[in-house]
Image (tube, rainbow, N blue to C red; front, side, top):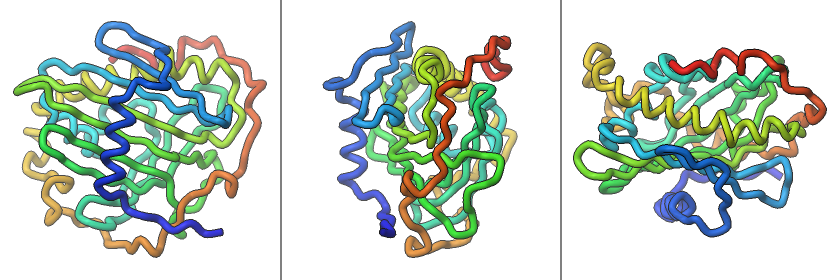
Length: 264
């Protein structure tokens, strides 16, 4: 059965914010310095909900919001990313895009096609996405097409020059992953990713001054040059329609924790 795609409304954003702020039913997996990581086991053992929080001193909420939107800047700091591009816009605050990322060797790399929607709400800024199917962007040969059931960011302002970033993700990786991968994500990869966003945000104002400083199509829809697409062209990406691979016996390679793990 084809599942129609619905663009998130105010109640979806409110529900997402509530999940970010609630601690009921969440287990702390990592808590060090300004970073906390929680997990929540769902009915399916392969699909885990992870939530992270980092307090970002000396970074305005608006700056964090810009960093998470700015795909040209993402290429500078997101070392796990292989490729990302926008496919088309649905409304003034919703679009469809592609993202692929490096998995720890020797696992296969994953990619997504997602519908993303965003909402600035007073002192809060929200970005949420979930996986969709687009007829011109089918699964690729060298990637495992993963499924974002719900992924997003909540940014809260803590005054003039400080903010808190929450990242919540529930992804079906389309494969039986070994336990070491799940543990490594919550203990190592997730905290590192949050710190990377924080560091990138500290450097962003200086970088943006030199790179089309007035171009922010996520704030000024009239600047958006993406082709318009209709929500009727999309269907919800169901996990069960994708290849499922078994990587549960793959052993962790004792390389130097992968090149993407360098502090940079």
